[in-house]
Image (cartoon, rainbow, N blue to C red):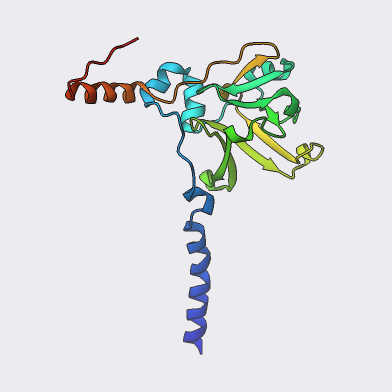
Length: 200
């Protein structure tokens, strides 16, 4: 009887461990970013802080200069600092008091991807730019600061991941899908095939 009870306790203790190791169903279906640049290319395009936050999933300090600028910005659109995809607008912006830019919804849902993040011993939902994979921040649901928003959600976004354009301003040009590495490879293949590649 003791053996059976011990075996039952052992099995019960292993079930949660197995469940924790199993990735979320959405993780398997994660689309690959359309824009892929090498680490060197990203470093050339971005400041050190932008690179740290967007390409290595860092977090800017709360209530910093970027946040103060965000609070003062009027009507306009927020684009990805890496690839210029539209992410949010001032219509979804709200003051949460958390120290990071907050939105209750994405203006172009197709450009903001939500995925499971269990780093640092926590279970959260990370938000990334679907087009280039840039880390934007996290989204939180049903908390007191977002209770009065239409979605009851708070997209807590790093300000350095955003590029603001006032209403009436010109939207930034989308970063091309290819990368310098891809273009170099195309040139190499063409050269091997004896085809002359004309550069613009």
